[in-house]
Structure formats: structure tokens, C-alpha cells
Length: 112
Length: 112
DNA sequence: ACGCTATACGTAGGCTCGCTACCTAACATC
DNA sequence: GATGTTAGGTAGCGAGCCTACGTATAGCGT
Image (cartoon, protein in one colour):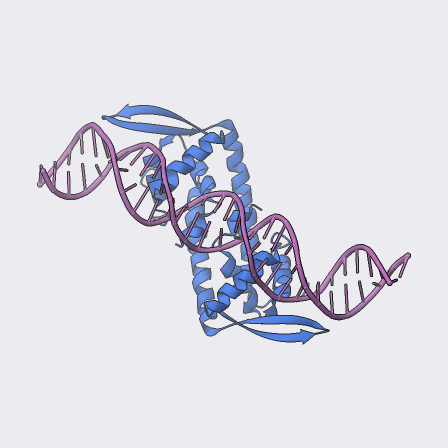
């Protein structure tokens, strides 16, 4: 998958991943891999800064904990994040409709 | 529609638009509007450079003409462009499957 | 003891590419 | 002559994802 394709959809992915319950960063990356059927293998340099961005935006909140000697930052959706997620899902639907309207047909009916 | 969403999908849109037959730049923009149900209103500063890029890549070829005193550059798909288009369509399907695998579900079955 | 892998977090810098803003020009209409 | 439509173009910006790197702990094999 060419990497630019993700542009502008990453936030939606992260919010949706947290919709099922709070997760820490590393677990989010694994969840994305699993739920995408292996297609999405996002580097930490993509995910961690994005989570910070979402936190600054108030869409997620985080808490530190220590499990088996390792520091974890666990993220959960906020109320605003939940709303942002529905917006993102709606935007995704509009986006796919628009693109598929173009990609879908070969020759096109005039003005129909 | 947030503008970054297009990233990495513009080439597919342009190639698909030309799949129905050769068009000049301005007409491509109008066709994209029509076929996307008005969702895609791409500025010339987006489309013209992209067409040049596709031409450099050998995916489209262009010819100048003059109609009613106005210069037109008409683009058509090349063989390589046709192949690139099928690749783009396949990539789009993979992309949507991946994203919808993540967006689609709320809570997720473990390892299922 | 040492190396390797997995787990877990992070930052700095770069690069791509669509968008904004702007310019040119012919024709039509008012 | 002003405005709008059709038609083409470029320069430069900025968002944001990725590459490459750095840090640290735990566990396993040898």
C-alpha cells in the first residue's frame, strides 16, 4: 500500500481503534494490523506523534502505568473524540462515494 | 471534504476520468465534479500540475488544439496509463478493505 | 556474560504533493 | 468597459506521514 494513501485518514483509524476500549500505543499498532488484515503496519514514528496530536486536540486522553517493568501510556477516547469519530466515519463514507463515483464507471452517461 | 484525504488518490481519479475518452484539462475538472456528485471541486493548481506529472510518467499523452479561439491541451490515456489505472483500482479496493476493517467494527473479537 | 528479540516509548528531520494565490488570454454579454 | 466563462499556467507553502535513530526493560538461548 502506497504510504500517501493514509493521509488524512489516520486520525479516523486511531479513534476507531480506541472505540472498542482503551489501549496503549504499541497495542494500537497491533490492533490496526490485526483489524486491517495485515495491510496496515504503521511505524511508531507515525502513530506516537499522531496520538499526541489527538491528545492536544482533546480527542483522546492518556494515563501512564507500569506493567511488567515497562512504561505504558494508555489512551482512551474522550467525549469529543467520540464525536470526532462519528464525523470521521461520515467523512469516510462521503469520501468513498465521491471516489467510487469517479473510479466506478468506465464510459459515463452525459448529464444523466 | 478535508483536502488531505485526496493524497495519493488523485492520479487514480485523473486516469479514471480519461478512461471514458480523451478530455482537456478544464473538462476533466468538470467531469470530476459531475461524476463525484459535486463532492470533488479540484482547483486548477491541483489538476494541471498533476496532469503534467502523469505525462512525465508516460501514463497520459497530450495534444494542443484551438477551439473557438481558445487553446486546449487534450489528454488521453496511454497503454501504460491503462495498466496504471487497473493497478490504481486494485490499490483502491485494498485500501478501502483495510480502512473499513478498522472503521467498520466497534468492539472487536479477539484473535477470531 | 553476551547477543538477540520482543515490548514500549519517543524525537528530529525530510520529503511529497495538493492547495492557495496569483497571472495570462480569448470570447460573450451587459 | 466591466463582468463572467472558458482555458491554460506557475511559485511557494504547509500538513503530516515516514525514515532513521535513540532509550529502556524483560526474556531466552548459548
